[in-house]
Amino acid sequence: MGAATLASRVLGLLRDTVLANLFARSVTDAFFLAFMLPNLLRRLVGEGSLTTAFVPVFTGWLRRSRDEARRAFNATWTLSAAVGVGITLAGVALADPLVSLFAPGFASSPGKHELTVDLLRLCFPYILFMILLSVAMGALNAAGHFLTPAIAPVLLNLALIAAAFAGAAWLGVPAIALGWGVLAAGVAQAALQIGPLRRLGLSPRPLWDPRHPALERLGRLMGPAVLGASVFQLNLLVNRFLASFQGDGAVSYLYYADRMLELPLGLFVLALGTASLPSFSRLAKRGDRDGLRAAFSGTLSLSLALAVPSTVGLIALREEIFTALFRWNPQVFTRDAVEACSLALWLYALGLVPIALSRLFVNLCIAHEDTRTGARAAVASLAANALASLALIGPLPHGALPGWFVELQHRWVVADLGFAGLALASSLAAGVNALYVMARARARHGAALDRADLEGAARIALASAAMAAAVLGLAHALPVGEVASLRGLALLALHVAAGAAVYLGALVALRGPEPARLALLLRLERTPPEE
Image 1: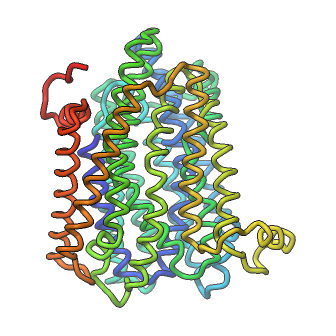
Image 2 (image 1 turned 45 degrees about the horizontal axis):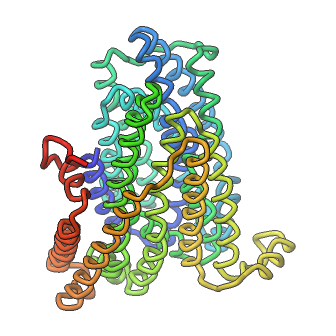
Image 3 (image 1 turned 180 degrees about the horizontal axis):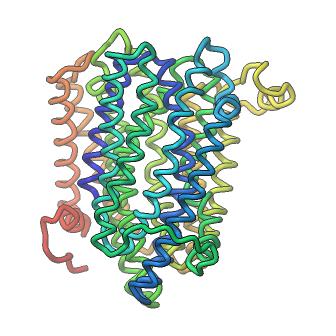
């Protein structure tokens, strides 16, 4: 999963670089908002809740018999397809009011609202194929197959890169090609899962059985999981809504910063979370409390050993990252854009460790078929994000929003940070989410950080501090330059490699189990280290 996710993230960086250098900020604002809405629904009713809830349910059916598991899968696939078609038709029909609802600030920029509506109508069918992909992913993960679902996002990135160049070369409105690219990618991603499903004897077949016990159990688990597993995306929705009032570029700056955060988030945190859930579920169903505690502690240690230095590295190299990766066309991606993206990344990165913690603790609860804890944490986090965003963005303009709301918000403001305040609010909300989930998991399932976990966190923090000092010194001695170049990319890679080497060396010197766990993750050892 890590290797597949790395390929996807590298191509994602290439895709974002292409978009940043081919299209104006107003165009990328429109596309990112249009793609965000079906992508949000993908997290709400697809990957974020459907896959997460389906894994423990399907694991139970697999333990009974392959035939019963096959019937449960086909019933879920058929009902999911019907729901996906309904959502898609509604989204296409309501594209105009949806854009007005979620990005009211776009109406003040000529043509921006209309372009977003056209793109949204092309992007919305993506949700149908992502719902089908989510069912396939849940079945494949429960059966121990992770590679093909993890490869699927590679197709999205390839399709968008091709669409961007094709649109710029041949279409009068180049941005429309991006919508067609999203649609083609959705078809390809879902189709890619058919082969592995067939090899497992799970070829999708229509089976209308909405009263199947698996669907009833899935519905009970999935309802609370809709919020619990999608809190980060819902917080982004609040951020994009408010960012639409910040002028051209604000939505794009937040998007690019979030994409850089998603590199370690997807490569390490979410990959470990996805891979750990089936193991947690099997151990919980067997009643093996000691085994579950050991698996959870080891996964938590590994997740922190990757998330903490990633946070420090993103903050230390934030300007070098955006200069070396994005500033190939300085007339389009200006120095101001580098500084704006860097500021957003600095504040977003503060939420990486809380996201890592909450993902694993939510997985532990889901393994016990407890999805309410994650849902309640989501409600608290969403409230914290909305209140912090309104307090930190600065005064909202009059006109697009009700007068009473604007007046109330003006009294609530404590800082005028603009779009950067939205990034900070997102990290604060992630912290609220993590604290709530950890407290509830301890109370309900006895999951608490013990002394060994805290000592490991201290070692990781010390090693990350050493890495930060080394990276900052090297970046000062060998700057990447003011514009993107092959030399700048090589120097950025050198900074990252040197930081990683210093971090690993410091961990080894501190004599903790983290280096052995990292080596095991990279397949450098064949057996786990002795604790």
